[in-house]
Length: 483
Image (cartoon, rainbow, N blue to C red):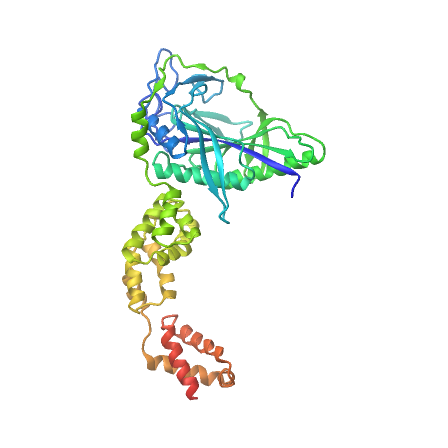
């Protein structure tokens, strides 16, 4: 057992998928827009303007809070967080500091071995995003440009308690959180596009001395893999410092993807540096019990609920159910195909072995962005059940369907993949193999019955896998016994 204990807390910003920004009517869909085209006097902080709270953003924040087991407060309030940065046009950010919309939530994570752990969530609050800096060329010699399209886009910030004790747990937590917000439809959760951003705080405790290192913050990591890698790097760096009797400074660090290490950015700000005070231009946010209850009743079936149902209803192993319910589109596709075919485990096998591999290789996010459809599985299984194709042929067919969108019947006809059932033709191939391999025939006669696999393989090679293995085995056994 290690003498060191890792302590990790996460701060996650989730961009809400509203049509308009948090406090104005500008479009919030600004990721691919031309720079500085989705802006107005409100989100660029012009004198004399007044913000108005986005009602849908409030609904999404409440929905997220309830799905994460938070206590939603009937009274919350907005505050100003003051700091200067080029992409913050007002010189302050509107957020919720003193009275957040929700507190005391939790998420349960589960590792590959089925071990579960509850991660407590301290708070969820609403705020607006800042703009985006674009560094042109060499950042030391070139220019930095500012795009304000993102300024004012609605966010919820979720702060965990320091319950995470390994980089792997941090990754599992983020994967679970993204799955939930996607099920809810409140966010795309795309880390690569900035819709889900993570700041990680890490410290290491020496269990023998009780001494804890300073806390280090790693900012704006844009993938689950990099969150895990950055925390692994910091965990190792801090432990090595403690072993030397040194301490690491309390600071903010960034993740350098090319060098696969963290780099120092600045000393860590304290909360009093932000000079929080109540936002004077917005009234308190007051929610009724009826409003909160109505949103609670509208929550969809969430990943954990769906996983338990898939295990019970479709008799799936826990691993299959966990993978299939990790993504809303994947779960929906599986369920439709399972109902059409009446073969849930077979559908699961093909999705997990063939479809997901294809999606990973081609960096496809949603199964609905491939060319396969649930109806293709129905036709595929009908072909197998009728004996027209083998399961080996079916595996290869899946890849062709994913690429072309053609029906299994079309591809079988085009490529001539129907099972070879001509017994006389199969018999001739076996006789030829027997003549060319008398040693194998003699081994069979001597009682080594497993050698029959050699002759089955010869037929499969000659027919390009189109022969029915059961028929081949029957004919091979007959010919070898008669020889």
